[in-house]
Length: 212
Image (cartoon, rainbow, N blue to C red; front, side):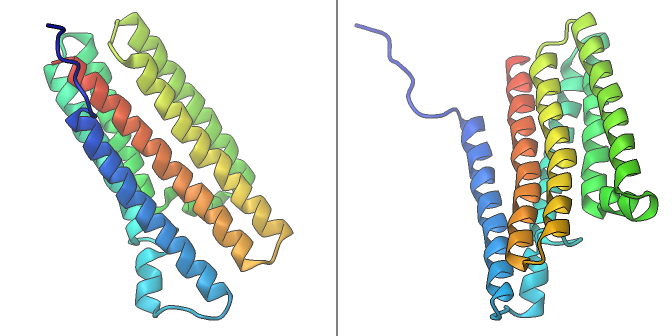
């Protein structure tokens, strides 16, 4: 008899898909509430704030923050399991995920733009991001860390979404006074960050699972 062929998704992939579905529901609800308010039919202030795509403490922002907390936990587990220098590399990933979670929770990027300006914040963010990613990739390859390349690639995707889509939102706000257009721009920005954060979670989860 031919060996049985496994069907369906692995359990770890299923709960990542469940998270993605929850995130999609939260972000789309936030968008619909903003568009509805733009045409003069606003929901209750408490409901709008709860699903606001960019507000501190809102469910969409907390969702992305929570994804990074999960990444930090998985990377910490990988650090504990790994041997020698690979453990240090995963510890760096865990620390970076904690920083990203905190930055997302309190909107460090927006605060920096208000204090130092959009251009200075972008330049500093790009410089720090490139330096950090190059360091992670170089050490991961040098220390032969399994999963170093895809994890660094996923972090790069998040950085591009966080820095690039923010510029897109700013451009839309500067050329259009339409609240609907701005709502869609913010939806793309915050949703793009959430999607790339989920990709990072999936990649880290796969690397940790293979390292068992």
